[in-house]
Amino acid sequence: MNRITRSVAVASAVGITSLAIAGTASAQPVQSLFGDWKASNSTVAKTADGVHFGTYADGGSVGGSVLYKGFDGKLGDVSNFSFNFTYNQAGALTGATPYGRIWLDTDENGTADATVMFDPSLGGRVLPLVRTDLTFGTDDDSVRYDDGKGNSDQLTWAKVKADHANERVIQIGVTQGYSMGTDVSAMLKSLTINDKAFDFNVAPADGTNGINGKDGKDGANGSNGRNGVDGSNGANVLNASNGKDSATTIIRESAGSSKLVGASLRKLTVPTMKGGKLVSVKATLRGKKLSVKGNKVSANLTGMSVGNYNVSIVAKFKKHGKMHTVRQTRSLSITLAA
Image 1 (tube, one colour):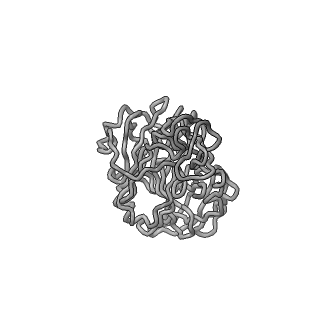
Image 2 (cartoon, helix red, strand yellow):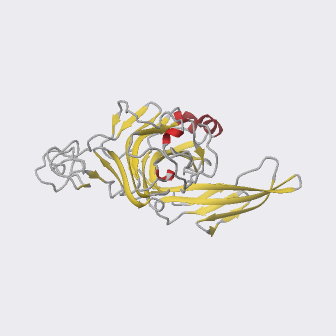
């Protein structure tokens, strides 16, 4: 993702009501990222203050996501979605803000082919306030479909939902990075999807009186620990001591969760033009030409690592004796399995 690099003064010029100091409603506490929740890599960690991203020295080349796979349904089943966060950066670039996404399966093959983008910067048009609690989501009624770079206009949530109502939701998440900015970081406080609300700014699930508690869930080899919460033979807790509310507690994903989702041969459908006859198609992935047969593009992500992969498609159509060019960027993702 590479949203428009544009500096603006403050977010208050936007008129987006939820991009303001926001409170959080009561919600289900999420104490660690397991089960339906997953961190895409080790730069995303559950702390007592929320899910922390970064810090990313170069927000354009690195980043991370927190992913939720507990939603079973299609885009038409999503009544509301929002996320509450704070973020920081060394400069003043609009694209340094965290952004939410709903990944969709458009061709019913079980993998994500497109995303609905919830971008608080509105494609680089505004600069949300740093170090401030902000909320963004469907109520802001400004989204993009399958456009991570911000090349297209913002669309209403109602239109995107109606146009893609039958596309199945693969996962939902919030990402920081893979965009722009220097010394970029963020804290995700809460997330809401339909009637489910989740709080991340709660103490991690660790041992009492020393988070490395013996027999504690996620605790191992600590000092002065005893009988942690609901676990056995814990592991994966780093950098904390003497108290489960320590702000430096970091719970990382299980080392056993290494299966990649999306690292396979992906088939993309070429964009269409009403009344136009398809003449030719060219498609590239990171500068490399992709195979095209008819109206299908093959993008082989086998062996690739976790991350976002943008496929550029240029289709030429003949209509009423004139040639027309349709350009589209499709964002493919590889994530860790839940």
